[in-house]
Length: 119
Image 1 (cartoon, one colour):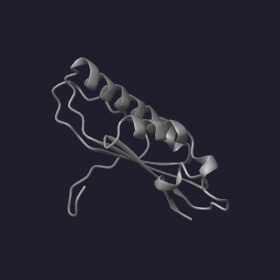
Image 2: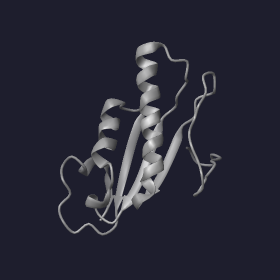
Image 3: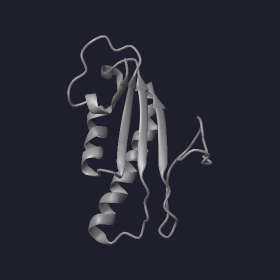
Image 4: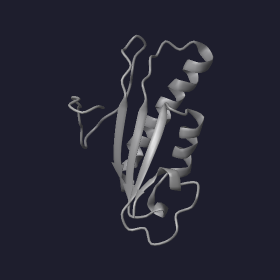
């Protein structure tokens, strides 16, 4: 998004991401806190599958980017963090993440440091 961009937000309820072949590409911003990552992680896996199919099999899906913002008290409470980092490495520039911790007391491991904001 850029300054003055129009965005749509959805909080709670049943939601999904199911682009169809021929749909215009969209850029997703996914925002999660704590265990709220569960449905969004499923969406990220679906996006990764579509990107993987797109690269190898001439998939007709036109995909934009996906950026995940995920917050927890500390890095030990960031569920699926290694899987999420794996997706960012597998699809650089297409899937990115930014973790935010609010009450981290211990040192943050080097693997997570580039993706962490907060205390």
